[in-house]
Image: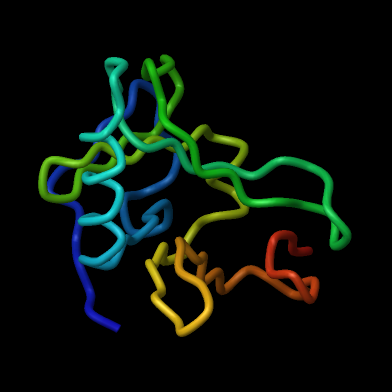
Length: 128
C-alpha cells in the first residue's frame, strides 16, 4: 500500500499529537473522494469520516460529505482534500488507513483499522 502524509492538520482543541491522531488515506482514496466531491452540486467542506454505534459487530464506519467543519473537528488535508473527523470517532479511527479497492465484483472505500478486534462478514461493522 502506498503511504501518504497529510499536508496540514488543524484543530481548535487537540489533546493528541499529530502522530497519535493520524488517519491516513491512500492516493487512490484521495483521488476517488475528490472525484465524488467534484460531482456534487452542493458546497462541500470535505470528506467526513466517523464511527456510529450499530451493525452486527457493534460499530459502523461512516463516510459522508461534510457541509461544514465543527469547532472540535480534527482536519487533515491530503492533496487539497480535507478529511474531517470528530473527536469521538478519532478514538476508534486512530492509526487507520482509508483505501479505495477495485475488485472484480465490487469497488469502494475500505478502512484498514489496527484497532479493530472483530468484524462482520459483510465488512460494514466492527468491534474494538
